[in-house]
Length: 380
Ligand SMILES: NC(=O)c1ccc[n+]([C@@H]2O[C@H](COP(=O)([O-])OP(=O)(O)OC[C@H]3O[C@@H](n4cnc5c(N)ncnc54)[C@H](O)[C@@H]3O)[C@@H](O)[C@H]2O)c1
Image 1 (cartoon, rainbow, N blue to C red):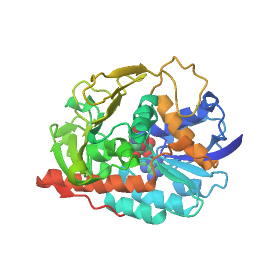
Image 2: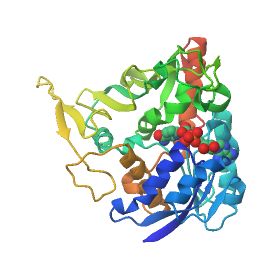
Image 3: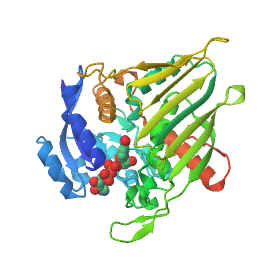
């Protein structure tokens, strides 16, 4: 099996998730290649101890990402840094010629994304954007169901990502609640790629959007005894119109940081005249679907899928699939493409899908702040 040398830039929450997924690569079966993390970079050197303890193969630890980009042992990079830095660091990574799996939103705003897009597209360089939730087996079933044409005329599509911890007004502020670091999109920049990925993959690009934006918690503790302004949008409900004429249908995208009681709920629901299907991470082993013929019964069926991932693994089929599995499956898709595969028909989100999601979010931000329906202007 081929080994691909990886570097991580940004060793926080998500950097550790990748390191964990790579460390248990033996979990996957019949892979073309495996990642080997050889270099890590973070401006906070205190994070390095964890990597030293758990990744003996790392030969470079640096606080300067340019030093990591100069390392010939690094073929591909995972970059997971705060949003404001994407627009500067991703183009530098791309200029180095190394492959990139970059974290969403792939640029803090549309201008940053345009800079990243301008730097991508080198022949032979694989560039993908992180989005792991569609790799749940139940989500894959809903996607396959839609791709098969089983929906008939579409009534509505909804994809949601719901968090609840921000309902606590005493939760300290962090960079994801700061407009100048997270971006003016607020919750949409944080969660938008998660909800846009599947609709865009299925060709459902809204031509216009209306967004309802909600701001409830306006100050937060700064961790040093004071309260500081918290200006990012808490919740966004985007209603787009896909298609035109009698076949047009609504696409609802929900990115909520204050959804009472929801820990990390990602859901996808597609409703059609002949078939409907849905998946939610609340029921991670199941998907639900309904097939309808005129005059027939309207019966939803629920199937327990257990562990039936896109990339085969050692786990028995009756067991449960979870978040860390979805992360590893996303990595499997990226590594498979790096090794010449087709990611079993479901590659990670592409740069064009990331750019399209920026077009949607930019229109949604204008819609929500100006109170009007806004046409989405795609690059192509
Ligand atoms: N796919 C997902 O489910 C998911 C979940 C959470 C976050 N994310 C994304 O991952 C990215 C990082 O989020 P996180 O939650 O890991 O944040 P984090 O704050 O835990 O980690 C970010 C790290 O980047 C480091 N950093 C800052 N400037 C740097 C620089 N110039 N060079 C190197 N390192 C630098 C910070 O010190 C920090 O350790 C964001 O783009 C975020 O949207 C994705």
